[in-house]
Image (cartoon, rainbow, N blue to C red):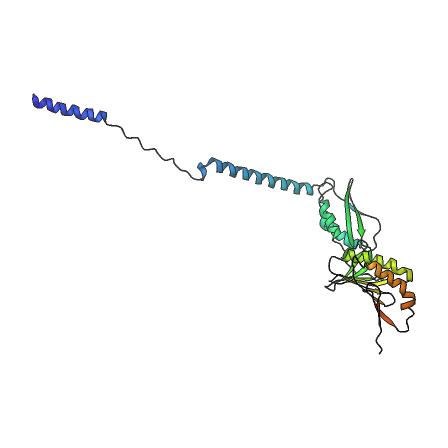
Length: 276
């Protein structure tokens, strides 16, 4: 009996021990996958990008289709005003290249830029004219002088002091100077022309050196060396002194004078021609 009780006690003890032992937490099961298709934020971003790209492609396709529609076609490019330098065939070639689409879709800015690249065109104005016409107004360059640049390319100066490419068979004065000084040279030319007209002389060449010194070649061949413009001795004062003394002291000289140096504050020097 005692043995049976002990055995029973051991069994009960083991049962109690097993019941009182703490249970281990179950292992969490990993998700089936954590790749691209299991990232909602990335999926939404890709979807947005695809929607935007598809919308842009659809809009572009619609624009192309609209340009090809036969509605409101452009039938004429009308040039307003008279042109003396720009050729009609140049305008027609530029028009065929850039005037595309219909009345509403034609790119006005592109057309204007294309016309302004034509030789002798300073500015172009392009407008739509209902119902099927483009109106074109062109402002041509008006040359006032030739420009002698460092590259040797024959160019011209217009009435705004702008340098442009071109050639013309006209007796124009010659300007020269560093790049970007053409408007300043034109302004000085007008001052010299006004002052020298009092003694019936005219500037044929106006040159500005890299050191900002001025020289003027007159229509009688005489060279004026004016030097740099200074606050104490402006160019206008030197030119006025020359016009004052030219009729008696220079024009009536017994020797042939080829140059006059006006850089002195209170006088000038004469350079005679070399004999032989």
